[in-house]
Length: 477
Image 1 (tube, helix red, strand yellow):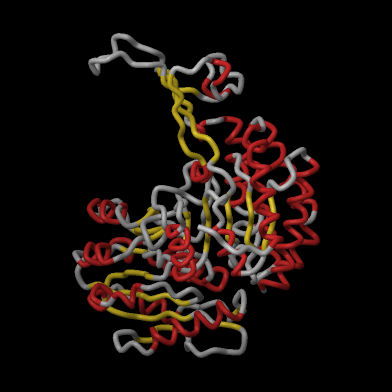
Image 2: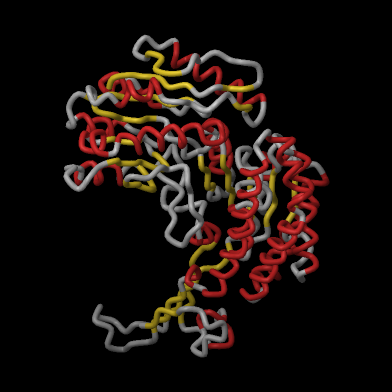
């Protein structure tokens, strides 16, 4: 597919193409050191970056300080992971004339290699961790891919300054010129995604925006993988046993979770499913909710108000707590109420409301929990609050088919950067349910497997050689 590109964009992508091979060929220790240098540069500039982020996103300093620490930790963790080498999945099968399939087995070796230049669309709600130097950028660089980042218009000054720091740190650590670059503007982002040199795309944002870009990636003459994190209501199922034994924990934890960051987390619990007659909903109506707080930007605020008005106008929903009325630029938390049958039968009630609002759903029969689970679309998370006496084995099985991460007696808004993390789920939570955008497994999105049959040692990738000079983990025979 041909695309009419601004010369600056053409230069950026051409430079990424030139940088791709030397960056992919660099030793894992070299890429690790470069990622560490980026982390060091961001940490050193914290006193400069955090005020810019606070001004552009309206997020508090404490939140931004923690997020920057998470971002630099992530860069270092992914660097350590590529030196360990598990993500490259090196497999060595030596020749075997007696292979039981009925024919001799040839010498066959398989390893994952970088896919090529990656386009990352930065997110608005995490200006560090899911933005210019966030998880998508870090995992693609770790995999050995050059990266072009499309800045989010919600924090342009922060994006440019972060990009300056990343570019300088990579250059000073010996990375090839062009291995990282920033572009701006929606048209530039679409044009870059259409460019034949871009080998994969990554996105965090709305269902509408993500699906549009996914379709662009799929309509190319040569379609490419597009890893989009889109939307999720993250249901929380409260069993009758938990409503009785853990009610204080449920109430306080839920209020803290759905209002965290003014409800602008992709893992915000948007549905709290509780037993009717337990009094949980009535207690929530009397609970102390946090004060109104500004949202990230006017576009997100306007979208939230529009969606909230749709819910308030629905005759199947009643107002449980809060007024639902706008108060200047700040938005106060709102709790809504509906019965389980209404939510089961009305897809509109199960759609995400991105902001400080959540729907409390009351069920009269525990059997309705299965119906609610079956009615859900794909989710990033699903949570169960229960006790050892709760009969929820079937519900766990159902939810494992709907969500990428299941939680027991905890809240989904904490997304830890770990080796075992899964941040992804069936559509529309993401466009690629078999992958994660958080944790060390995120590197694997930007790798593809290649098998080498009957090759001499000196022509094999180092990870597949018998002497294993990289000392990566090899699965042999």
